[in-house]
View 1 (tube, rainbow, N blue to C red):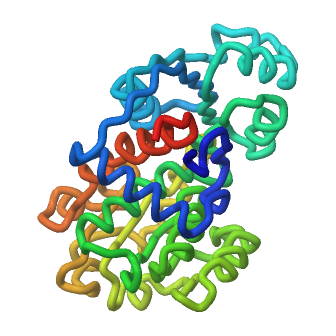
View 2 (cartoon, rainbow, N blue to C red):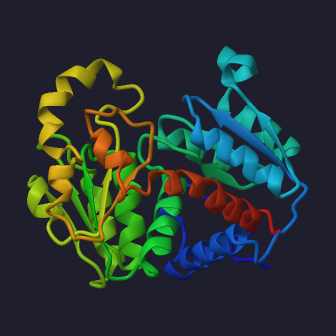
Length: 306
C-alpha cells in the first residue's frame, strides 16, 4: 500500500523527506508515460478563492486517472448560507473520495480534515500553497537533474508560496533564500520549521538584499506583490517591492544557467518584467504544466491507485 493512501495533505511538512522524493519520482514517471495508474474516484473542489491553474490542473488530473470532478462552488451550495463546517464536511465525506480545498484560513482547512475521513488536500490557503511547491520542485529537478545543492532565491512578499518553498526546499536539500522588504517577511515559525527540516543539509536565508540573495543562485522565483484579498494594497506596495523585481538586470547577477519561475498569474512590469518571463531562461510554462503532473501523482497516491 502507498504510504500516502488515505492521508491528508495540508502542508509540505506533512510528508517525510523520503515520501516527498517518492512523490516527485511518481510525478515524473506519470508525466513521461512510464506508468499510467487508473482510479475511478470522485474529487470535490471546494474553492473560496478564484483559480485558473489549480482548478484546471486538478480537474484534468482526476479525469486522466479515470475519475470525475465536482465543482463545489460555495456560492451555489449551502456553505454560502451558513451551513456549519462540520456538517458540510461530514456530508461530503459520504459522497466524495477526496476533497481539495482553496480557502483563506489554514484553520478552515484543518476543520474539514478533522471532520471528513476522506483525504483533504490543501489547494491553497493564506499560510501555504503545497501543491505549487510540488510542481516547483519537479520543474527544478527536470532542469538540473537534481535538487540537492541547487540554490533558489525567492523575491517578493513572504507569503504562502514563500512558506511552502521554504519547507519544500529545506526537505530536499535545495538552498533557499527569501529576499523581501521589512514588514513583509515570511512567518518566523515557518522559517524556524524550515531550518529544523534542513538538518544542516541546505541553507535557509531570509534577507532584505535582493542582489546579494541572487548571487550564485540557479533559480529566481517570484509571485505577485499583493495576493488575493490584498488588492486594495497593490498600488501602495509597488514602490516598496520594486527593488525585488525579477528583471534582466537582476538575473545578470545569478548563475549563467539560472532559470526563472513564477507561480502565476503574473503582473508584468511589477514583480517580473516581460523580458524575464518570456526570455530563454524562463521555465514558467513548464512549471505551470507540472501542476497537473504533480497533483495527478498526489491524487493517485492518496487514493491508493499506485
